[in-house]
Image: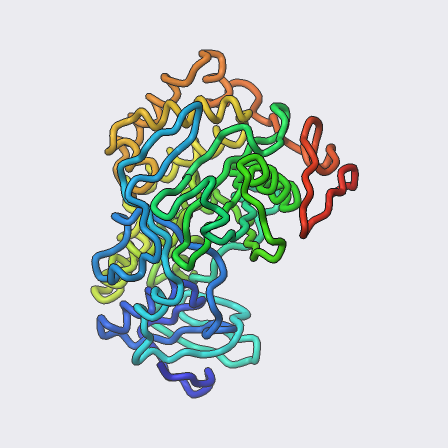
Length: 418
């Protein structure tokens, strides 16, 4: 890895803007494939912040097994009952993932991209890079009022977390009514898994709500759950927040290596799953598809997004908008219906990039099995399409019916506006 200033860089085959996990993976694999690669990032040595989880079978075969820091053979989904999902789930080690993606031979520029075009990147210091193709892997901007994934996580020592999550277990979706939210408030669920460093993350999560549930409310709900289950905190636990849009579309067919626009990749390039908020494993799995297209002089966008994959994305966005208007009771019924689907149908929604037939069956059967019958109208958008629109602008912290909880970090301040 060569650190240089932009004015010393010749034309490259590929310029990658953004060195998060997906941008770094793309630069790494392109370099191994023999392309001359320049990578641009304002802090290329930074430690990645978020916790990255995935289904283990989503990861590409070229990654070593050791990148999975914590492995759960059969995680649990709680609806009205515990449902065991017989599919291994893992949390990635950020340090080992980074180590597995060396940038040997890649020219790394420390700087902020001021403009990113299809063949030229202008840096904020006035210098520039030219390349046969430019990939924009910088991630997503703030969601505003778009359908949002919002989460607040607290890292708890494993021995303190034992009442809820043991070393070999994990809760992917816990819809039990333990978070103190009332039935007339936007719903959220708990995600709780060991992360491989002796701690368990307890993360209250909201998917699909326009603008997302505010962080203070999500933390309050997380604290309520921990208190209900007898998990006592020391008060100095680390926290993690997430707040990003879920409806970033795939790039249009006119973008690509010969276009005036850069090739978006990763979450910026439509690889953020609209229904789950996951993107890293799916993006890693598609890195070689993009690299192979670049090496062959073909359009990477066409290779990454055939019509089957675009149809899958569109169907998943129907699911996203459906989730964003449900009550907690309706969400529980919907997830219970979904997790009665076959393994292939579950994978079609959760993971598969282009299995449109199985995904169509999964979505149809989920609606058909949701009960009571009248709730199906909300799920497909015939009723209550804007149920939660403007909710948090009109309600104080905690909302009607929620219960206060003693929080050593955020004091109970019911009645204070958001």
